Image (cartoon, rainbow, N blue to C red; front, side, top):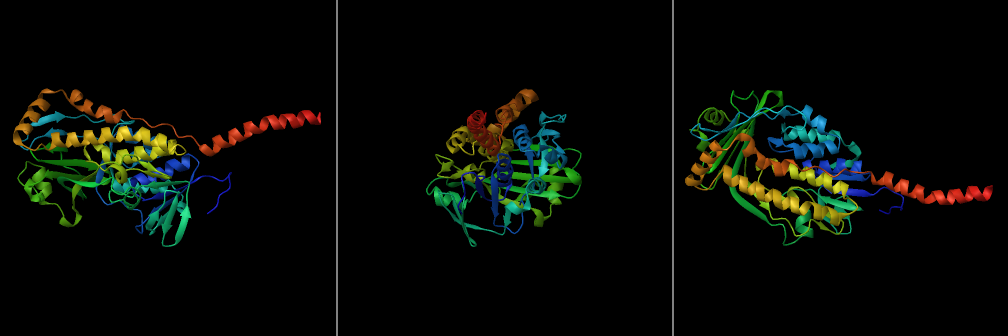
Length: 389
């Protein structure tokens, strides 16, 4: 499709998950026309809940949906962290509001993002067959060309496999995860239980629901492993509905050397899938989306800005996973002693590296271009007025 020099720039977004939808909203704020390609027949998020820390909320505020997200979230209130013997490793206090963390169901987050976009730019039931570094996107309906293509199609990204062959390999973590939602209020104690090679979490959601999750390293492959853990864990496991449990291995992606190639930019799990610890999975996808919109006409700038952040986030999430689920009992015992001696505020300071991130402001390129063109025309207009006099 041909465009005139004065037309708005166009972005094609492959994938309608959290990162893709956030990118669409952010790019529209920057003055771009966007088209989101989602192969599923409707926008939905398979999963349970997630924690949005201040860095993610700051990015969502930048694109104007932060308040809607908070209205559909539960304040992050955690009873604390225990070990399987019931020993308290850390106590938490409820946040006071503002950019304090929140807990949200993934489906609720997707719903807020979808409602922030005009229906005309969303193409459900449309699989992308191929893309080109020149901005071409090919579907069963034909081909279209864009000024920017955003690859937000997840861990098994078709775009990454086509454009970055041999890079961005998917690696298994050896950690099995279970997640499910309970349509009942949470028990009196909510929080996390850190074991030897495993963990269990219980968090509240809006609507009187509860989000439960568990994870374990190799050697533990059934949820019933947690059946003899102290209450309320054992009761939640006993009452879990097998049809609602999502079980999978946590996957990682070693990011390509560059997150851009031609007119294509990788974001989210397509670029750097990582362990969900520290709330970094969805958060980094949202960060990517907002940063890309700020650098939309400067893709090398986007790549430079995100590469270091992504490497740091992956390193932190991997190390945190080893603290929460250490590979041996001696390390777990040392962790429990250190956690007991370390004040909660100091222990939580590890989140500072993650939480301090703030988005670069998004400016509307269209408005800026119009102002520049007007300024360039002013001398000509002044000259004409002078000649008329």
